[in-house]
Image (cartoon, rainbow, N blue to C red):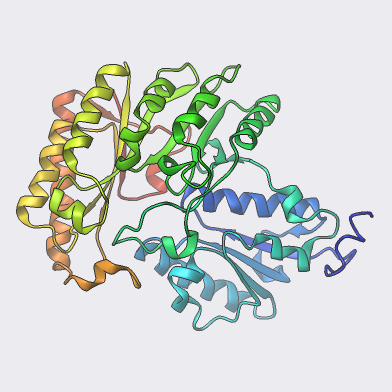
Length: 393
């Protein structure tokens, strides 16, 4: 059976004009946008630069924070007003975590992360999506993004993304290694091992991040591999594998830790399932075990139960273990999350704490003799996340 016969539901031999709006969000959302772009080209469709000339508008969404949702609403308005007869297709997390965004839109199709194969009903002239999906060089992150899977193993009280990604669904180690080998054969040598929480890799299939990192560390060839965000709960569970990977010649030496807070009270209310002391001991040990280690944290300030004492605990931690890069985000209620049972702190106070966190962090950096720079090398990551600082010694 040829490809045409295997796709009876697709419209055959019709090249379509498509405008793809690929919003920069998390690495995997950006990666899915690149997969769709390649898929459309492989099936002979025309990707147009002017949305007013499109028959189809495909909007890849990221709605993790309120500022992204605001930009998405405006983007949809501009696209639909400019191409009123075009058919709208929405992909990404927005349909699950912020469906109200589409109240004034009429998408013909709304696709989650596991639904992209449904594009075949319209666009698969020669090659179905499942056969065209593969890693691509990502200009937003200046690396080839290698997906470890989708989903996570936690139920953090502040996070709405779980509604979109579900529980962890790990890819086989062999497939991940084969992806890296394929890209190496094509001349790529910079990789990002990405997932919604790479630390919980393997919990669904009897494997672990240790197992994966051992396989990746043993690959031959010159490469620079960046490991994505690790939840502190899985940091110590996979300490040996993380340490050995960071010491391998294949590693970028960066360690991304999804910390969120240094207050045990706040961590408990966030349902993070760990205490701060184990993080403190783990980082102290890692700094000794990995020469040239570069740290990156994600921090949330202004969680509803964050007292002044709790906030100061986070500031103290930043002084004690100042990272080489940091993303500090102000807390805000997300619909459908259990943290909405708490009363939000005044926005003025949250902004004040955000400013203080950056001020204390900047002071700690000066004392360490660090300077502002980017781990993306050629790309200015500050353009991607306005509240992100990237620093190298």
